[in-house]
Length: 397
Image 1 (spheres, rainbow, N blue to C red):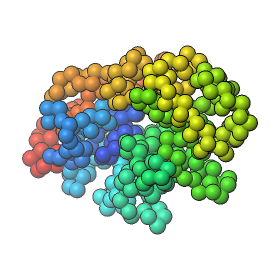
Image 2: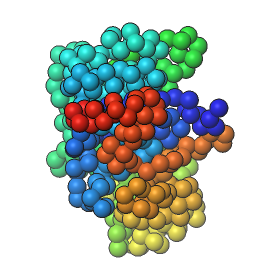
Image 3: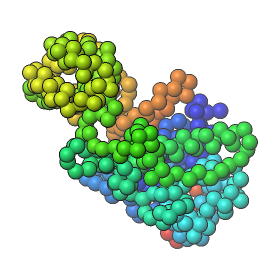
Image 4: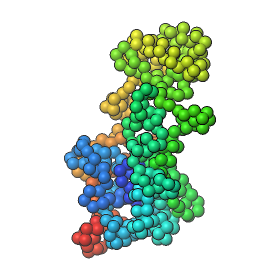
């Protein structure tokens, strides 16, 4: 028996770009065998998303496709669909993110595939879900950040709406999908039943509005942009210093009192308007104006040394290179090296979860296109050399 948490699970990943591949990568980190089904010649769209490139391989593709095997397959051909159905018989999970209705047109819907594998867990990821008035719309992270509300609360208070700096809707949809698959696997362990999972990018976006959405549901007041500030906590934002910026997050009255003492602005604690968080939220503008004057008197390093000595939550505004070389990030093995078939040694961002008995790990570099065709068709499915040769000659694989 495998020592990996999901070492006995096989996943067919028919998804492309980010949400689906991110989901299957997480499951691969836990030891699942992930077979990535890609179109011939071009493969996953992100294989062409560059620069940057490393030996012709896209950095974007590398970011979400570790711990996978690549099989090229033409799903529009009858022979290609037969190969996929053979794989479904030997697999536990299928993940796809085609436009709604595509898999049904190909004869590969959940209803059809559960006939050959009743225990199959079938996860569809789409922009808007499998039902509702928007079901046929294509789903793009950027568009759904606008439509789902996050842009309305992101960016300068007096400026234009901003998207988040990464495709955060895709990533969170992948996270929701991976947890749903794990729940479905647990249900199957108890009952033997497979099931269908419907994940929508828009649903994911709405779900992680969290306290901002609840603020509206509770008050009826439409949330607005606060830039780097917090709608419910003050002071909790970025402050300009003598030579840069620092982020300061003061979460309670005790921390605020301590800050005023060490910053030499006791009068901002003694002022009755600012002695409670509700008061500081109410008088946000007046307080922040005063605090900006305070922070402008020292450089960033001096402020951070002072605040961290008193355990007041604060941090520099790190650039990406500073983050990936940070001693804490390195200590937590969030940057790891692995050998790639074509490139050689490459560095990847490591798994988040640290499990004591079944650790998540990078077991294999992101695959080259079709790298595992022979292994999957011969070793897994037991196809003869003659059949594999015919599939190749007819451009099925």
